[in-house]
Image 1 (cartoon, rainbow, N blue to C red):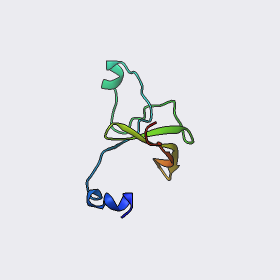
Image 2: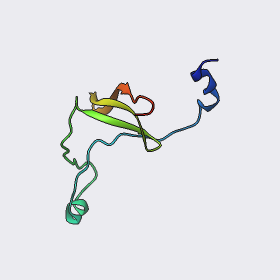
Image 3: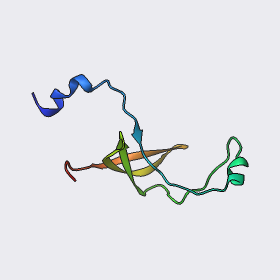
Image 4: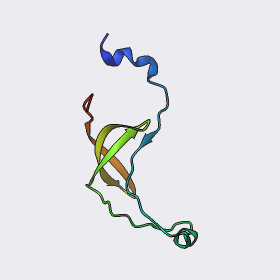
Length: 83
């Protein structure tokens, strides 16, 4: 059995995937002024590199993509074990 086959019994466990797009500092009054549908401008854009974390650990790298009206991440590489 290969290494992936040894993990089959874990294949249905849900895991949180995190991708931090950007961070922004806002004042309390700016936050209180937000309404449904408000847009917060960020410095990142499509094509930029982004880290992908699972359980708080860096596992992969990707790039920001726009799919129709949604943003997504295209995985470009996986973190090498031990790095």
